[in-house]
Image 1 (cartoon, protein in one colour):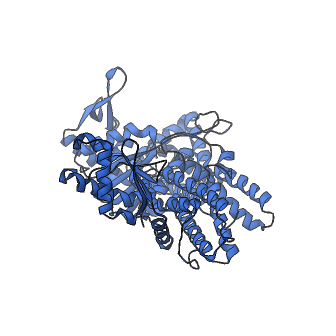
Image 2 (cartoon, helix red, strand yellow):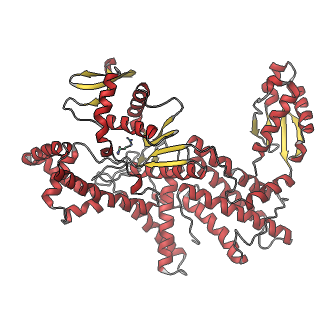
Image 3 (cartoon, protein in one colour):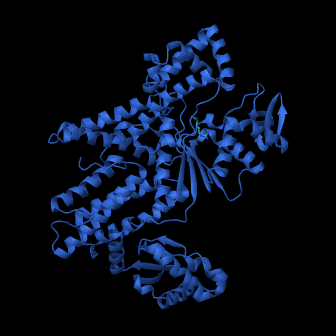
Length: 581
Ligand code: ARG
């Protein structure tokens, strides 16, 4: 099945070529929504000059060719309006047939695209530090993109670029050795890693002997000392428990298989520096090996370098990221590489990729994209913090959302047992946080407002979850399984039925656009519109109490298709749908 614009665009394009000849093959049909029809083609105005005819005459020729091409199989209304628009209204019979096909399609019209290998770097928290709300957002957006691209038929390789290497590890290892690997202090790594980090930090800043030990430990770690590596592994392992807890709570698809932390690139860094130097791309400046790229200047026009080897011989974030792009292209065979990372790192990535392209590590046909993630703000419009001013614990935030949602369910649904209410509360609380994150363009900031996220009205997760439960309750009342027992005969007659059917036909195109443009919020906009169209449909068109059995059957088919689209859509966003709420 197809949407009206997908059905009509090739017809209008073909009609233009028929009317004006070969030179016009592939012309843009310029289809736009219209107040007076389903679609209007503005092509006559765009073409008038070129073909030397008044727009309305151009329109008349296109209309004649459209008729010859059999456009009447699709449209019931075809007329010229205004200065030279062609108004197109698809017929109820066509809409009905398309909607019936959609109701029978398990993919609800989501296309299978030419498969590409897409590597997605997302989440990427730092060991022994709290995952902050910034990491929350890259985790949620990245996961929605991974799910969507997989659904579109692509091979997705997830890469969790965990910060598990570098100078802080001297301090962290020394602290772990001090407190003992099996101590309660070490166990903090699994529950409140920031507390562990802060304790190490306080010692480092206040205890000179500890600081000296910590610095020496960095060197032993980097020289590959076995005992030090064992402690480091323990540290990373405890942190992993924490990350996995967050992922399980959020319902995110990342697993240990997807871990590819900074440390996994160690052996490649020296070679990267050598190669850059051999190719004349890197030069030594003040003892550090640097790449200077055109157009990157700081204050007073001083060039800003990408430092690939520090003057002390150590490697930094930039060097590791040169290694990431190389591995993703060469070993993981990426056609497309996405870095779902905070917007503040934009310049870092631009410099790394430009360097990698100059070094010949990234062929022109590999697309590399920074999916920029905006900030999560508090009510004061500053970065979200606790009242005391420290970074907010992600787990605490999620727990708060679930508690608030459960309280509402407890009030509304005293008929359900406590376990069921708790489960629904969890689904609503987590869904609300995820949806709030996804429904905003990924590169804009948003204010974290739990009350608004949990509201049952407006563009929220709970509103969409409610739309699902309302559909489910219709099928429960009818004693029907929506995907099995529904005859898929659709006969659209009422405007509200027609509007719903047309909305459903748009789903596949929206999912494809989310994958192409990497913008999950478009799916949220679509689902919210669909839920509103559904509400209007219920108002106008009783389903179980429809006047005829034909209308009842048709409306149930539309409801089954709506349920499928909502479930698929929420699934792509990584949001669960409760059975009832
Ligand atoms: N660990 C980094 C941070 O917390 C994000 C890493 C993103 N990925 C990358 N390849 N640099 O800011």
